[in-house]
Amino acid sequence: MDTNSGFVGFGAGKVILLGEHSVVYGYPALAGPLSRGVTARGEPSNKCQLVIPDALMPEQRKVLKAAFSRAMAACDEPGVKVTFNTDLPLSMGLGSSGALSVACARVLLQAAGRKGSPSEVASVAWEMEQEFHGTPSGVDHTTSTMEQLILYRRKPGAETGRAKVVESPKPVRLVVVMAGARSPTKMTVGALRERQKRWAERYQRIFREIGLLASEGAEAVEEGDLEGLGDVMNVNHGLLAALGLSSPGLDDMVHRLRSMGALGAKLTGAGGDGGAVIGLFHDTEPAVHELTRLGYRCFDSQLAGPRSEGARGAA
Ligand code: MEV
Image (cartoon, rainbow, N blue to C red; front, top):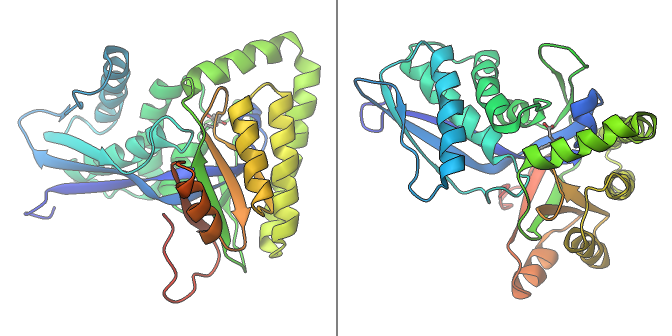
């Protein structure tokens, strides 16, 4: 413990490049970390507690309290008072709850005098994620814990998922744009589950195809084939739209990014009536400049690959 600052834990936000939603049904997804995320701080206290920001709505407070209770039970309730702050756009599909789960897990494990290995962090964060999302695949908190581009898969019924690190010989640079507010992930995932139950064979076909795209995208990354990766992203967006997970605002932004020269563009995360859209670019700067000028909230991020000297880090 640092005597000046107490315990500190960071959880990275994430971007799903390919395979959201189908990952819930056991197919692979390709996801990478953002350098933005949630920082939790802990100071010794006579009881284990989380300070919940006043701005949160009663329902959000209730869920957060329940999630933290599960994490603190998993760490034998160490005496620590935890606060947090974030530089990640919230409720946009960028993994804020996974990042919060990982940040809290890191602080609780430090306070409990435990080593905090990646598997320990992931297991405590998983407790929180289940409270936030109901039936999460685990891709969010795993990406946040590993902080690398991964091909993630959790087979149906498996206790935990498996993640393979995907190395890239070229920088994988994205523009991330906020395209309107969206409903909670739990609702979007739940509504899709109802459609999937009703028309199981049709929906499984699409999930299977998206899973194949995620694996093809990982191969394209490893081969440095950014045009190929961009094409897979475009096809994935089409299939997400077919599953009823896009909206006019998300589709407009996807087309806008393509018209700005994106090699590929798609919604990322749960989607639904809004959320974030990603575009893959050789050079992100002109698009970020233009989108900012037009009044959009956006940033760029390098998810994988070599970083050039003096280049801006991932946002
Ligand atoms: C949410 O970031 C990604 C989803 O696939 C849900 C999940 O994987 O748990 C929509």
